[in-house]
Image 1 (cartoon, rainbow, N blue to C red):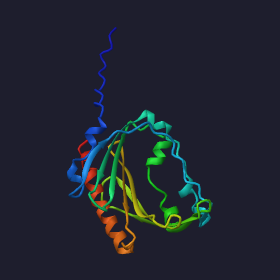
Image 2 (image 1 turned 45 degrees about the vertical axis):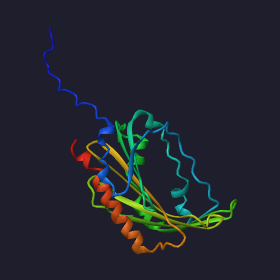
Image 3 (image 1 turned 30 degrees about the vertical axis):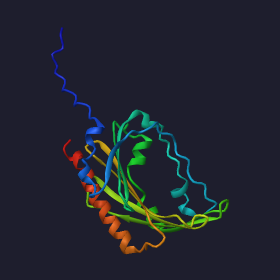
Image 4 (image 1 turned 90 degrees about the vertical axis):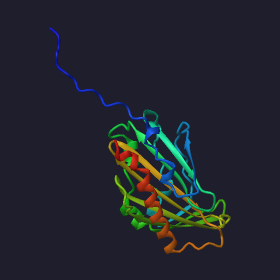
Length: 218
């Protein structure tokens, strides 16, 4: 006896490259390119001698197990400025295994821990370097994103030339995970006051809103 039961057609596989935004998602003057993702290996965390407050150490020594990325499809985009503006990287992930460790890694950040560690100092006595880090959790007005955070780092000692702000946001929309990061180095004569950081957070939110637009069409 033949089985006449109809099965629904499977949705066609999504090519992550098709989910990358157009160049216009970034501010004027950016060179945007598709980036090949090499084989991802577990990153080596920085080894700091002292972290203050001590309970903030997980923010500096976390080593995620990213071997599961081999089971996923990914595409990445790099947007580079002509001057000292943020460098953006946008990555989309499809076929993320449910209930996997990487699902946790992409789910977001611990807002409570970030609030507790809004100001912290890390020290590397081997190189006589001290880094003061300020963390700021903010909520960009972009779909699929619970929140984002920025880190402002200023070094002393051997690392006195280190002055930068990095921003991170992760989210999910229509079963596609995404990650947007930016890194903005600062010259020694540039100020790193709260008004400048807030302005950078707002610009990051605007870029984030543009980069996720192709995911709304899924």
